[in-house]
Amino acid sequence: MQRCLIVVDYQNDFVTGTLGFAGAELLDALIVEKIKRYRARDDAVLFTFDTHDADYLKTQEGRCLAVPHCIEGTPGHELYGETATLLAADDLRFYKGTFGSDELFEYLKATPFERIELVGLVSNICVIANAVLAKTAQPETPIIVDARCTASNDPTLHQAALDVMRGLQIRVARGTDDEVSDWVGHSPEELLAMKEKLDTIKRMGIEAIND
Image 1: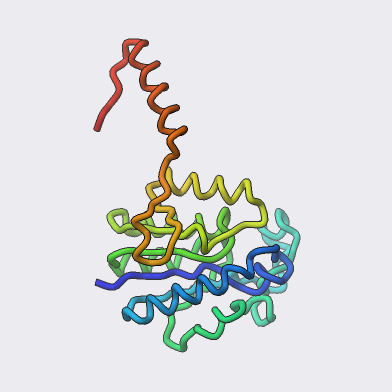
Image 2 (image 1 turned 30 degrees about the vertical axis):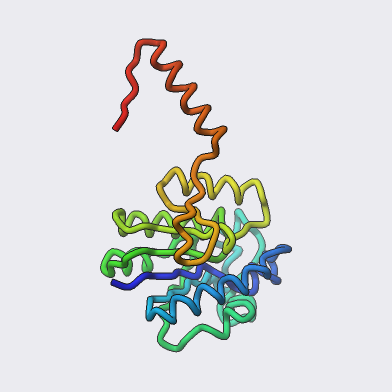
């Protein structure tokens, strides 16, 4: 069974364009490495594109985020850097007008994979949105996000997104492909806090569930 790599919205406008931020360009080499590794195994590589038109500012998203970006047909809509050169003619591309792709969800429901990995931008918006859709489409398939290969303009929201994904049983890894066994789980401090809460519950006479 194939594995699947989903490159989420690694587009010019999120790297050096209207919504770009320092450090986003550093993901390029890591994403390129991922793509090459997946292709070497004849695995699936998919791409999502944030896609808007000239009426963007009239949409709900445009009223909340009044920064035109990823307008179809503009350079900002195109993939960034070396990643762009690896887009093959037969690669599946999902053009989406909002954060999560409904077409990607339907595709994943119909196409089982051994595992699904997501990389790209932005961690606390489109990456987490599509990771949740992947988990919903294939609840028994490991869904992985390599923390080195995603980022946000807001470090606090970036870390919060990673924490939320862990809570949703999405594996947050720090390494390339087969190093995903290095799942970044709860810290010792977090585990101690959990134990203390369980002890408090027991002292209240409530038996914790161990399943």
